[in-house]
Amino acid sequence: MKKILFALVITTLLFSAHAADSLYDIPLKDIEGKATTLKPYSGQVMLIVNVASKCGYTPQYAGLESLYKKYGFQGLVVCGFPCNQFLHQEPGTAEEIKTFCTGKYGVTFPMFDKLEVNGENRHPLYAALAGTNSPFPGNIKWNFTKFLVGRDGKILKRFGSGDKPESPEMIAAIEAALAAK
Image 1 (cartoon, rainbow, N blue to C red):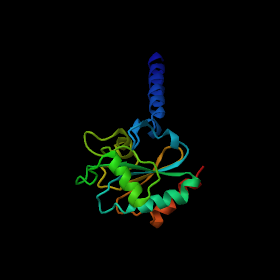
Image 2: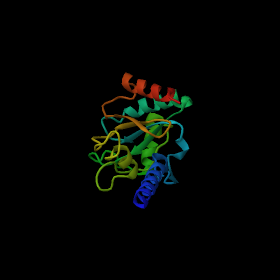
Image 3: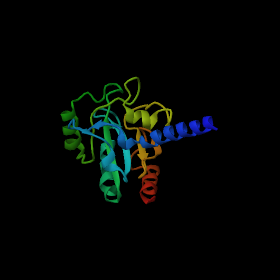
Image 4: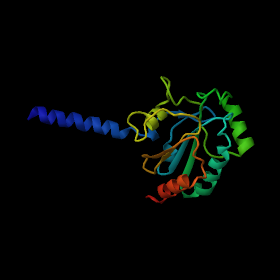
C-alpha cells in the first residue's frame, strides 16, 4: 500500500510540475533585448512565426501585419522571432531587423530577439512548439513556419512557410481559435 501511495504522490508531483510549464513561462528577449515571456499574451490567440528579412517569404510580413490589424482587437497577437539558421537570411542586428520590419512592412506586432529553431541550440520555445512533446513535432524546415496557439496556451495548428497568412485555411483556423472561449 505504501508503494502505491508513494507512486501516486510521485506521479501527481510530476504531472503538476509538467502542467506548470507552459509557453507563457519560457524566458525570452524582445527585439530591444529586454527580458520577457509570452505571459502578456495569456488568454490571447498567438501566431508564432520564425521570420527573416532576406528570404523569398519575407513579403509575408505584410500579410502577418494585416492579420494583426484585422484580428488584434479580437485577441490575436502575431509574435515574430527572427532566425538566421536558413541560408543566413537574417544576418542583421536586432536594430537592423526592427528598422527593416517597421520601415518596409510597417510591422507593429511584437518582435523578439533572434533565436535558433533547430539543432542543439534550439531555443526552449521552439523545443516546446516543435519538439517531441508537441502535437506538431519535427524540425522547422524554413523561415516563416507558423504556429497557431489557442487562448489556453495549447498549440492548435502548424503552418508551413508556403502557407500565406491570408490563405483561407489560415484565416479559418484563426477565426475558429478566436471564437473558442
